[in-house]
Length: 423
Ligand code: GLY
Image (cartoon, rainbow, N blue to C red; front, side):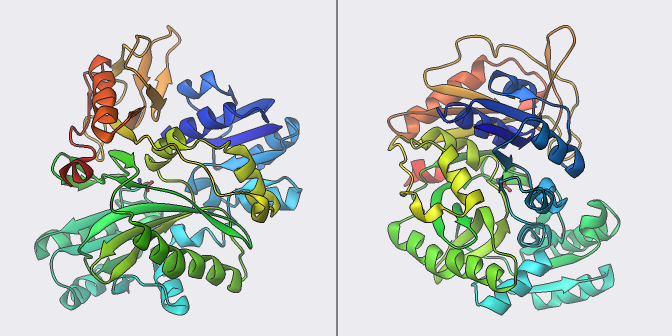
């Protein structure tokens, strides 16, 4: 098979690593890819939102399957354009992608189809949002309505901080994504990330993990796209997984099909396990980053037949995926300043050394210079991942690898997996 993989982050590097290991694959092309992905794929300089360029590239390489990594490509309509061109695609239509691209859409969707989620208010102006704060208690949850690369969420403990976040969003901090703001009731509980595949009709659970959203140890600092992840996460008891399947996953796929946009691809259910059961925090229309990295380390089955079955409507023929019992972890090395303005261009050395047993490093935001050196080119820069017979060993291996990487302009959290270790 020839596969075109779209995207350039750590999630896509992990997908490339797993796809390239499939005996079904003859050619893997990544667009635009990143320097790390060059080990698994041919890189082509077409951006993830250049829909015409990607359709042309898929045709040129006679792609049997296009795998969409990031939400930006879904939102740009790549899934729709590929369907129109008759090219099988793993990734939903832009209409189904509104489950991620508009938080207001998703809240209305939950109301319409009876999915449990937090109380909310959709606000069109700063004055309206500040007045609506009266209906909530601290901590206040303020979200930009649109896509903001995981950075459009502020949890404010004081009203003044909430009002400043509202002014920031309407002042243009998130561009068009912040032209509308959603206020939400703060949900108390433990957060989790669950993934489910759908081919338009049949759905299947596809693993779960826990992410660390705050920038600094002890769940301090601003919200990020995710500073680390581990799987399995003990919060996912069999009872909770069953509740998520029946209360969130199946109603979501049935609801989006009833609304006229049957879902093809992976749905990422970010949920809070509360005392009254799981409640939806957000849907995302792609794998989580860095959750995907740990899922790919744990997935024993070949990934490619699952991706293909979603694209072709044959998921009912597939068995449940097999997962390794061994835990997997991911530690994100970010450039200092992230999730604000990251230090650009920091030199990275030491990746070629023998890092640690069972450690794998995925590139998330790197650039290869003409002289061969590697430099940071983004907020989240590297994903240092490892497996082990238990979570502590997996973490020890990942941090041993982190300590061998020389990236003076970087930082990471040192407490990934703390909730599971504390149990
Ligand atoms: N790690 C959360 C996300 O991918 O949005």
